[in-house]
Length: 160
Image (cartoon, rainbow, N blue to C red; front, side, top):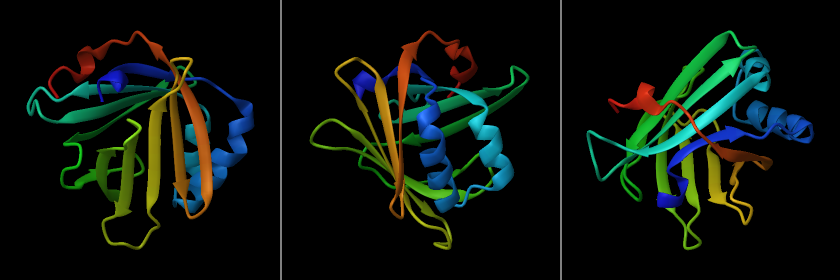
């Protein structure tokens, strides 16, 4: 998990647009929120929880058109521990569980709290070029995106 710690910014790739759209539709993301996400410039920060040192947090911030900023926090979670009820930025609630694979990939599985929406599986790993690669799959629709390590003001997450 140590390799993931720090901040990562999305590498924009026009070729990913259609796959991301199909994945988000399958996972039940609304039309309006999908359009906002396509214009977003996300930074994802992996960190240890200060309140629970055995746990981790995934904190994110998306800036859209340089004007709107949206924040979200996943966790605190313990690798291999109980699923954590989290609210997606669009307000839908999911139980998320996190684990590390034998290859050192971070696996996140999101199950809808009322089991009325499909389950999503995300896998993240660091590739040979040092990029964070995130792959997400829901009912056969998948997307693969890359992030590069960046400096970020982590003070906004200091109390977590």
